[in-house]
Image (tube, rainbow, N blue to C red; front, side, top):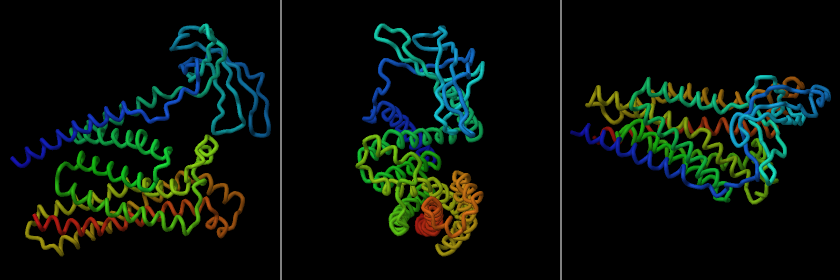
Length: 374
């Protein structure tokens, strides 16, 4: 009977989350703008290319590539038009198309609906992105069954919370740390209840993760101020200011990003410890509160080591080219470590790791109280 009630709660909560997904999908962000009037983005196929307008400037290519393309969708489907591929001299955005490539193009129209201008923007990747999405969902369902379905629901809810709530809230000037903490904890609660169900291990993990989240946020603020790291170190952050959002506090957004980056690892570690302790208590119901706490701490010591290393590799992996530049230039280590770019990554990594170290004993202590009580 108790197991059936728990399953009923899980089904109801899953349905509630699906309703939330639908609401979030329909919810406007308030920033829907039509920046391309009388134009449409379409998928095209490259039929021919002309590189006569391209010239070299050192290792970079400038100018424009002219492509004859076949429009595969939209108003001009089936027609062949010429589209320009403008090169800006930036390796991260420039590309040269070849015959047979599929690309995304922007076609501008005249008032009477004729083609005014066309530009090839980038390779067409949406079909591959959807393929990865379906592979991911299929693998989850195949491996985890109903739990996999609930995992997909939590994944979609988290993604929509970030896009529909967090990002618009930050653009509207809400306190980044408060908003980030609320979103992070909310996503953790939804994820844990969907994946772990309405169980003691989920409740303990939620409470442990929430307390550790607050402490991590406080450390991010304190050490961020002590390090004097400006939020301009984040990619594209200055573009926000130039786009008319001078009111944004980039430094506070950076500090909130420190917490959000490690919030998933906090959830992971808290539920690992809680689930392991639940298994210990099930096997030995007479275990004492002290033994539960000590078991939780021992489990935490093993897991924290691997989790902190995972966090370090995740952060450093995205920072590898900057480290290569420093080494190639022969920059002294003292300059590397003291520079704002490297210091921001050190701050990002170590505050996240401190959060992981904190969540372990907190969750173990909470488990020792709740499991012994029941």
